[in-house]
Image (cartoon, rainbow, N blue to C red):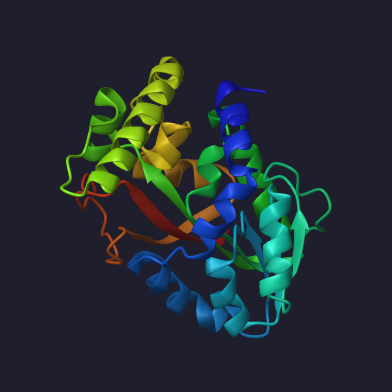
Length: 261
């Protein structure tokens, strides 16, 4: 197992993340693509990969009553089973969809940059498996970190910065977060990779404890095409659809809607 996969697995399987993800608000991009997906979801079969604590699942269940959620964390799955009885939830790996039949779903959702925990060399295989379980003309929605992001590259290079606040209590918490983040960044920075098409970056998520995959829009489009998809639309985090050639450097992540070709 790669350093990236091993590091990310330990963090995302933690029970302590449940409460934070249960309160996660949806971004304008997520809401925009969900609106775009609703007609395709009506009465259809949906699979959500990395369902977490169900932030997106709630919206999917408003559009269809046939939703299967998969997550690596037993604690997340336990929470979803309790909070969202209308769905079916399974503990499972992104990279192992062998329990799901060919063409079993009309829509697959992989939000919150969940594909970016997968090692670079494994992404094509994961996308090809998603294509296998999608019906003809099925839709895939996913978000992924943007290799062109100026802010992400700055963070990865410089690591944590200490925030100064007036409240002594909040300052103490900020200092503790800075200390933990600095230790994590020093530990993981050696695993970073900078390629013209993609990068593996230790960003600020979860106190700098993860190694995330970042990819350019052009490289992602090629990767999707090679795995049997055609891009329908791409949005920045503000929800605005990006045209061909639009500058995306201000977005740390991009949101893709793709169709099984």
